Image 1: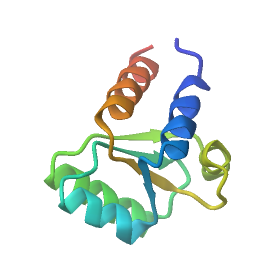
Image 2: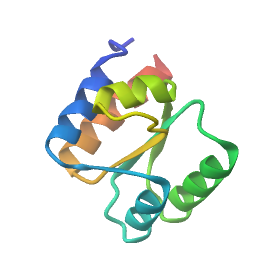
Image 3: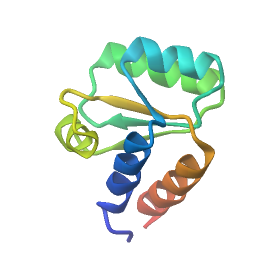
Image 4: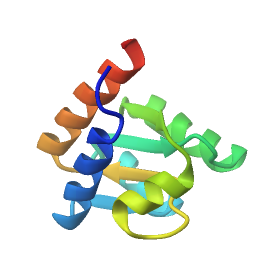
Length: 106
């Protein structure tokens, strides 16, 4: 099993590189415009937000993964109350997908 914190490091790097989008509406817009490469969702996200984001991801064929809670996700990017993060850079997305896939199967 992959070190659980490695994906958080990638998210932190992507954020510092300016490749992350936060906020339900902005994430949905990014998914619809096909700019989003992956969406990372906190395990304790609200039902309405969860449905909206996962439905859009499914419809536009954008991969999404459930990860730790909002506090862990927020800490990785240094912003509070983050329940979903969209990454719009292929390199970061590829690495995240590889790590998270391995975690799920591991």
